Image 1 (cartoon, helix red, strand yellow):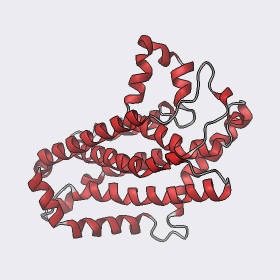
Image 2: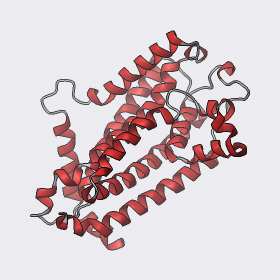
Image 3: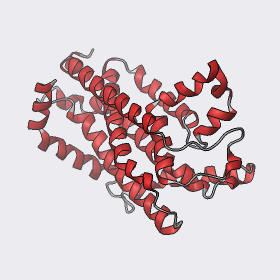
Length: 282
């Protein structure tokens, strides 16, 4: 694996060129450019807030429900977009890799990195909204933000490498990924908070409380929860029936970091194991 990393470093110029190409091509001939990256989650947040505010009193119990949803939608949108882009990346460049030598991992990596740049720009918009418009206080827990960003990059990059390689040989993967991503929008704590799962759902009581523990083992769940607690003040106590709003849990975040690093290493190992078989694809 060290030799593969050295080879990848030797082609770092090509990797950067592919990242620049992805950034330019995505919004070619678009007047709004990058704003199309932040527009979908903003529109989804607006629709979710409208539906919850007028259909139930749930959203009214938050100081600002839009901020609670948006802080979760940004990492979710990055995860979803990067995985979907990477799943098809090798097949879209299949003609090139059959004719030109290059480290194959450059292709899904360029997708992961270009989406990561949009991810960072989306956070910039969020901070302007949070601290400039809402006048929310800057919490001490904001120091966790760089760590959370790094862990999510490792998670997304590892899964991007894994999914892109698998999809070359098993095209069912793209359908499975699409279905799972559609379900995760509701299974992840995006429109609700994890305390509601722990205290008020059957999952929180399943197997003597182990259901909630297993739910929190998902690195993306821990990351969304971490971003929310690191950047936002607690909601109104009435939001959580039968429990309390839990503080940021360093152990959960460190565990998600370890799991994400393991996924990154496994994804890179599996990709390198199969990458020279790509041209033999039937």
